[in-house]
Amino acid sequence: MKKRPYYDKIFLFSLFLILLWGYLNSSTNPKHQLFPENLDDDNINIFILAGQSNMAGRGGVMHQVWDELVPPECSSEPRILRLNENSELEVAKEPLHAGIDVNKTCGIGPGMAFASAILRRVPNFGTVVLVPCAAGGTSIREWSSRNSFLRRRMIARAREALRYGGKIRAFLVSRGKRYRD
Figure 1: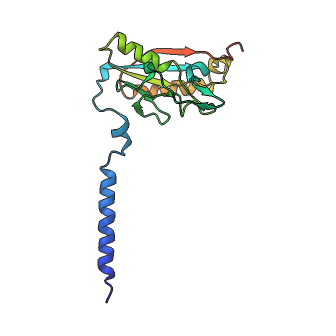
Figure 2: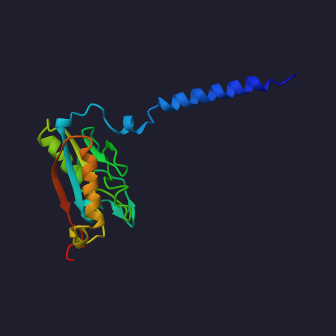
Figure 3: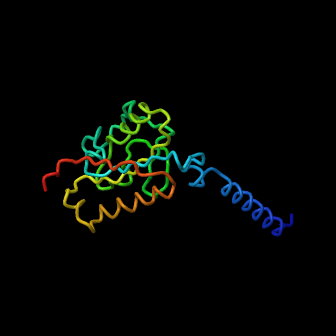
């Protein structure tokens, strides 16, 4: 039987186009998957989470392993978003500082409980955007220096959050063990 390479090339090219079309129209596009399109710019409330290990979250971490137990007050909720390490909004979930505080194992911190408490107390508060910036094992001096990496990163992440609309409502700071120096 005689081979028909021409038809094989057409078949492969058609298959390629179908796969490409499927990829481009799938839900893997980060903007569609990560950024909820129904956000009201006037109802976005941004909170910057800064400081040391207590803010970064060490709850549930033993021997550099997080137990993955999430208390009910820290559960994910569609109205609580976080700015992830790629400066994209996504539904927040513990550990909030995963991908941000990369030198330590992250666990439960106060950010999700804070956001949940706001929404319980004021149901029509809108969307809460949490911007994790904390870094465990750092000193207050590292945060207070005008040109420090931590401070510049926090300001840059706050600006990135503002690109999505809304207003910065507060800077939440929690210290860790290295607060004396």
